[in-house]
Image 1: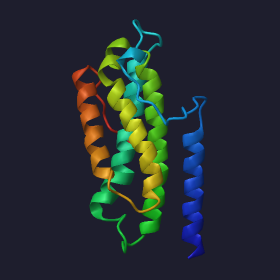
Image 2: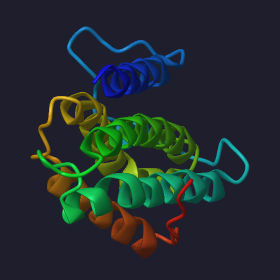
Image 3: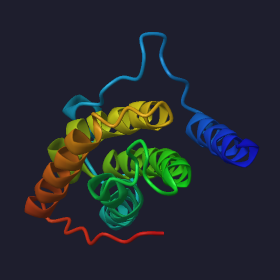
Image 4: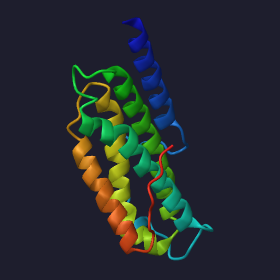
Amino acid sequence: MRRPLAIIASVLLFAAVLTGCGSDPIPAGGPSIASAADCPTSNTTAFAKTKFVGHVGLAAGSFHHWIWKPFKAGALQKGAHHRVVAIAKAVATAAFVQHEIKQAIQDVKASPGLCKAVITPLSELQNAFGNLASTLGTGNFASVAGINASLASLLALADRNGAQITETST
């Protein structure tokens, strides 16, 4: 019984450290949603769209492999075989995905055309993954299906705006 608790504690600590990384402090009212007003008028970084595609591809592939598939298979539900390990992997993945989406937001903010199209849904998805990392550890899986739908919508929106994303998992 002590080993699964140690694994969960380690993963939660890792998730807390990973989501806390970065120089952007979270405002007192909570994280804000970026909007088209935050977009530049010209490209400010080389290969911003390519970097965006890479980060979102990793995020989507990791989410589907480590959170969505175990959720659909029932591996996260009470009584499932190896449930504790599956939840620990899902929590770590949620933190990783939130980090990748944070990186994607920085890349999107450097591309005016892509920024206007996807900055708001991408920012909302980052907030959803931040909440998911904390709720998975408590056994609350209510938001997983909604996040999957939001992620699919973002991928379709990016594809319509010239950024075709292929999912890759780590």
